[in-house]
Image 1 (cartoon, rainbow over the protein chains, first blue to last red):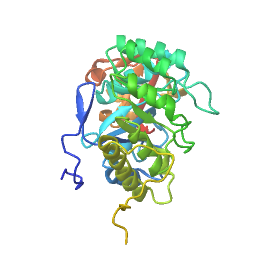
Image 2 (cartoon, chains in turn red, orange):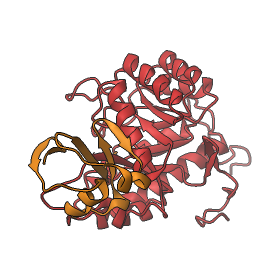
Image 3 (cartoon, rainbow over the protein chains, first blue to last red):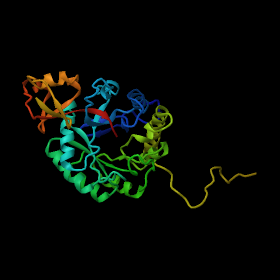
Image 4 (cartoon, rainbow over the protein chains, first blue to last red):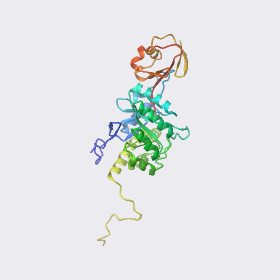
Length: 266
Length: 66
């Protein structure tokens, strides 16, 4: 039994990114919740050890408004600052330098988007930003398209983790290209995480069955009717998918194969 | 003294240093990061960093994001 109460999955089944080792394979976002208290409760129910966060201007007109760090506490979760809203490498570097100053973290999530309709990553600019960030001392987990060619370029440039989308951010459409994800996972020597596109628990399980190291999601939990219950479902789905991957699935067959022996029939 | 803080023009009484500005704005210095004229100011240097007329100040913090 491991600490999740799940038989068969050893507590030693950890994953490591940029020298930091984690047990939970579910990273959750902190956006779109109705309030920070629900957000914190969902992160706990997800069993998450890492949460993504964004950097924005403080509200000068109301400095007493609730702050994320008062609810989702940096001593409880590893904060993974993102570059959401950045469209150039320079924007991303500026944002993450501020994040590093705000909290001292150098493990970051890079996302450089192309347009606001589909939020798909601009891979040329993402690769350029990655090189700028690495030169500045960051350890970078990179949100990217599900393109194995670009994934390899990111890894060769020094990405700490490759994070291909399953489907566009917030779309909840599940894993759209299992073949490409499989190719990315097969070639990668750094962790691969599906980031974006998960809509429900089975999507997370599919990602883990493909052999991903972890899954990152936000909207699927935040926009569920009961976010805390969905966070729990996602936790179980990630564990189930991981165990299924480790267990090794049965072969697919064209025809039936009886489970009860045909010999000895009366 | 005229400052641009987070993109907004603000007239402020003269301030001895950045720490005084943070206090005047009602912010907790442990929860923010600050750029002065596009250069990050380490939190440890707020009391040594002057605030001058025309400065462009950005004050940011962590919010929810995915």
